[in-house]
Image (cartoon, rainbow, N blue to C red):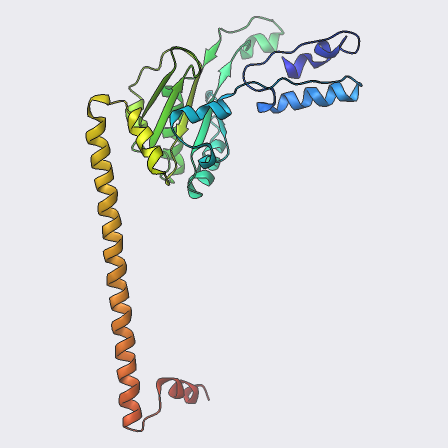
Length: 274
């Protein structure tokens, strides 16, 4: 509507007060910046009353807002039109250790290709992408891109109707969330980054789909992390010992050569280059 009817919205705004209500915060969508610019170009004063948005309400899932990277939008795939560009942004976030908020497609007042070509204003029924649909598309992206960031075992959090009494927040792997019924719209999906704070881990398991076993699953996960940490320490100690042994042998060799009056390795290298 904003893109197509901005002139109609602003037609009498220089004479009377005109209100434009949006879902979420007014400036979460770039099209609303365009509306402000059009108004200002016509000398129309703009006043904004900010609102809550999924962009900040997403923190209810238990992940810290400071740990989110750039937000991505996942569009409905349509036949051969299957854009994967959002996957590349998820990859950028992942490499930076950050979480990703995925905004899911909404189709309202959409015309079929046939009706659009014929100029017939008959609109298709509204469609709201579900968490499940977005996961299926992400798994397809992963199969084609193969970076390993959206594997079936990747951690994610599905959100539905945030802020309502029927709000639902469920965490698990992408594969596990495929089987969850999130109910009616609106849905969002969060992909958990590779670096998580202990409190984020606590919240992840608090919202886990398998509530009966979440404490056990959390304990197993933390024990796994501890095993990985200890293995990393042992490997570092092993490498330090190898380097120390190499230094000791090199020192002994220098002493041996000096005692025999032989040139050092560095002196031999210089003579060879001459």
